[in-house]
Image (tube, rainbow, N blue to C red; front, side, top):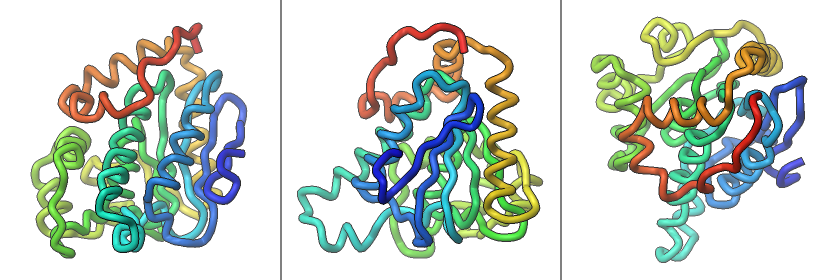
Length: 238
């Protein structure tokens, strides 16, 4: 268990499965981001990692209620914590899969796209960058993540400048996610775990995986690398 109230951790074979718990919107604040980071850090020895969530939402973005009540001097901690989580995922010495079990909006959408592969629920949920609709600027590393993970310019325009809400079939068609899965939350999680298990079975060197990932998205890595957990200790082959 990692942060009992916020997320659980379990092993399914060689896969480290993190599940954000509860029926809420899973809005990202420093506490939840810290819990996810702790769960990611506990993945040592696994062959691959999956991040999923319970309920209708994968994540509905940053916790604006927290912003309204926290002292202004603390506001930067949320941005820093999210940068750090993205850095942790990029530097993780194993493949990563997001199981988008429900709506993924704004920072929640970015969190899903920060993984190596994205599996999305077909019948419910969407990807949505809400910033243009709510009048919030997209910060530098969000923009870089979208440039590097959504390479098609038209798809990226529709996400960030039109505020399109993309269901799974459309997101697959446009190359943003890897698979649309029929059924409920557990079916999506099972599909993500199966994909992660296939990647783990390849027996790749985890440190090489991490270095290739950072080299594949160098501008994103340059914007987040100083916020993460730092270089991992040398590990044997997965």
